[in-house]
Length: 374
Image 1 (cartoon, rainbow, N blue to C red):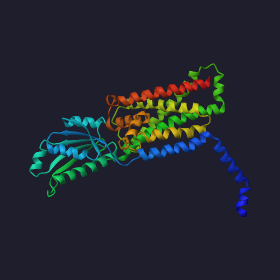
Image 2: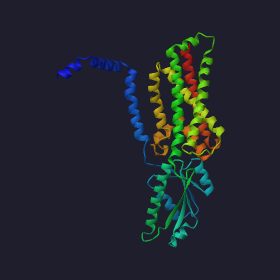
Image 3: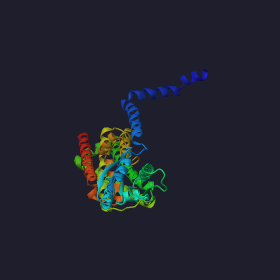
Image 4: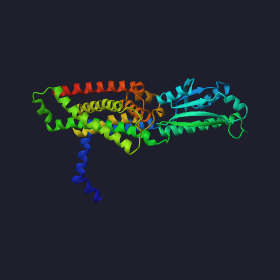
């Protein structure tokens, strides 16, 4: 009892009470303590789902018989696969996989029904986009299991199985998970670095009074702002090259596309990050507020980008929400250029989205910054 009484009468307890009162008086701190954890829990609970559903399946049915159609129906019965496209040849099927429009392709040979009726094993071909090694492995397991069940339904006494699968993994034949995650991490690093560095740089000048001294000079507001953006952009492009070098040297991630296109679109995305950073700097007064607020903005961007969890495994509402995420478009660009070697003929939608977000965010942040300067 005496120990407890001494604790309540000590300076330490007075400091504890003071900190509690100070926190409760700060509306910004209360918001940061309640809202971000709530949103993060919801996003992690919905977005980071290890189950895979609604994978887009392309079909080339050379047989075009009742049995082949039943096989496709069996594969799509439990919503793991959705028959997205029916094509006439294997070349078109491979191109759809290359462009990322389908996750897996199924090729049914023309002699499918004849072999089944003769009691022979009918071999079907499966093409799987293995950029995401985890999803590719799960898709292959689902396909094999469903085909085995369908084969057993046809003839429970037949041995070996009437239908066998020949699976080909495209773009990541070794199913190296690092080939999927490293390009995503590259996008995460650029997002955090570009937004934090640009915001902290501006806020630090506000804290030290350097910004007010700049206003005393004959320089125009646009000159002050541009002089801040250009050095940041150059330094951040160095980070792009550094991250790409680490991906190649440490993780052996292939580079199958155009380096000029990659650097150009990476530079465009850096303007998105700088726009977010300058906007944070106009909203916050101290560096501590900048760091806390940046986590509130950046973490949802990361979780809904497809960098950690495949977008295909997210609920439908979250899939549409990811279209408003510039990081999602940049990661698709990085994976497309590095792993598939595609160009603007495939990535033009993502490039236009990045251009739109860069113009929008820079316009808003520049206007806010000019208002503060005036």
